[in-house]
Image (cartoon, rainbow, N blue to C red; front, side, top):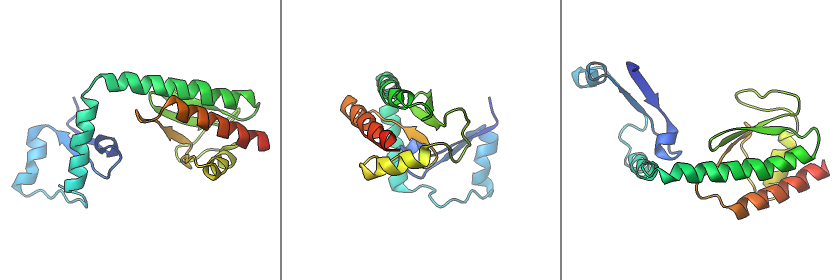
Length: 160
């Protein structure tokens, strides 16, 4: 068990919020004068987002849905990348995918290979991918969304 842990945006569904948790004798020092300053401390909107996110994540079925939709994305959209030699691939952990250029590795805050071309081409077609090459999926994504993404990606890569 760590003495202290910090949790970030995921706990609030992407809203700006974090939490410091840990042993009471450490955390409770803020009641004795230790300063814990923060821009969004006790922000009611962010805290409502935390509550809503925690409520959704308490349902164990949500993880199965995320795994299913993410595996489907990796299979269908990943197949498009694999069908064009030199286009790259995805690494996937749960609902997070990371573009990896063909024959290469990706850095923490960026990618190489065709990612800039892919990102710009997809944006022109109404699909927003992160400049970092990370793709975050959610329970709101559908098979139709995945198929539309694959079709647009095929167009982008075939024009390259």
